[in-house]
Every structure is written in structure tokens, then in C-alpha cells.
Image (cartoon, rainbow, N blue to C red; front, side, top):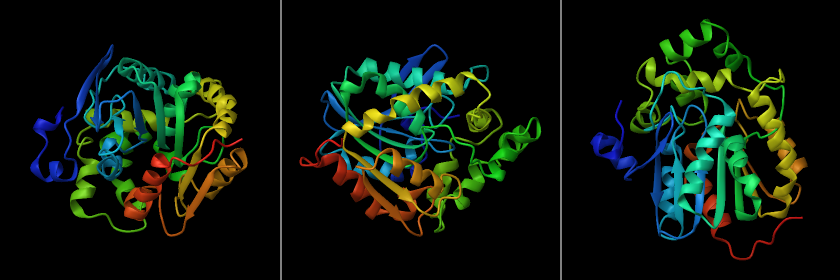
Length: 302
């Protein structure tokens, strides 16, 4: 598996023209983007499963001339190490992100989260809420819920689920057409799949599915409960909810829950846009994200 931009093929570097940095964790190195001015204020963009920092490439390109952009690949994802014996659970992903952010000595953190990036990003930053600035929520959840599509439940079935996800790439590959309402360009599809090219390299793709909190009292259930208790703190921050209305996974049920939780947020429900909303919505979604992060006049929500 390639690690680092110097080994990326030319077709991918055209879409992802960055020089990833490396951060050491006890289990292996995290790859992360650090683009833009080296200030102590940054936008941190946190991806989900089965994506990687590639998901945010157009946001980084639109924003890096104005703001510092930190975009990690979770352990097991993207260009990060893919240890086979690590415990791929929510508390450990949170700990990795928190360690990375602490190492950067950031004074203020603006946050963009998608999919698993919601609980991981919020779990890492909310305990230091005094650093939190603007927040953009994209098709995610950071609260307990029982609405899990059957196709995802199948991928977490014992033995069979691992064969589907790791053996047949039956999670990352279907996402390239199930998570969008418009066909992805061929190289963009290849970009999403690039890090997940073997049984070993698809370990996190499977473990994320297995780790979906289910109310059984696991460490990830407890971590999610702690995050949910802190979510009211977001009412004191400028928050935008930008949501793909045709998402089969984080559907309108989750959008409604966020709307109830954060009634003062700027809310944008996008018709005809799927889970990979930056792909489906294109420049319109990118502009909404950038406008919220760069606005000087949005008051804190109460």
C-alpha cells in the first residue's frame, strides 16, 4: 500500500494535488493534509467510512488560500497505516485525532464532519469546547439511534460481513454508486477506492461497520453517549447543517434529529443529493461550506 503523495499515480495527483504529512501513533502513522497558512487557527475536516481525505479535496482547494486546512486519514484509511491487530473502535479513533490536534497546538478549531467523522471529530474537540469555532455538519450522526439500513447490517454479520467487505470490497465499491445520485467520473471513483485495494487494506472499512454503536454497552456505545451529552454546547457556536436529502444511510430522519437538537443552525436540505454530497452537489456545496467557515458576521447560536 502506498504511503505519501510522492508515490501517488499521476491521475490521482491531478485530483489530489497535496503533500500529506505524517503523525506517529503507537499503532502506526496517520497521514494528514496541512494546507494553507501556518496559523494557530485551522479548519479540521473529518471523513467517515469508506472515504478518506480525498472526500474533502475540493473544499481544501477552495479554502486553503484563506484558512489553514487539517484533514486526517483515520488509521486504517486513506494513506494512513493499516495495522491488522489494532482495536478499531470509536474511542481509539477519537484519541488519535485528539493527539494529532494537540500536537499542532491550535488555538481555534473550526470543524467539518461527515459520516463517522461526526462522532470522531466532535468526540475529539468538544472536551476542549473553548477552542471550537464554526461547525459544518454533513450527513452524519453523533447520537444513539436504531435506524441502520439492512444493507449495512448485512455487512456487519459475523464471518459473512467480513467476506463481503474485505474479500469482495462490498462496502467501498458499492458506495461509489449507492452514495451518489449522479455517476462519479471514472478517476474520482478510482480515487475513492484507491486506498482499499486488498483484504488487508480494507480492514478499517469492515471494522467501522462492526463498530456501529448498537446499545449493547460497548466502549463505542459509552463514547457515543458522552458525545451526545455534550452536543448542546453546539448551540453556542455558529453551526451549518448541509445535508444530502437523498442519502440512503443518513437519511432525513437524522437531518430531523439534528434540526431539533440545533434549531438555531443554518439548515440546508439539498434535494437530489446523496451521501457523498460534495460530489453530487459540487461547487454549490463547496461554496456553502466555505461561506459558513469564512463568514465574519454569523453570531453564536443560543
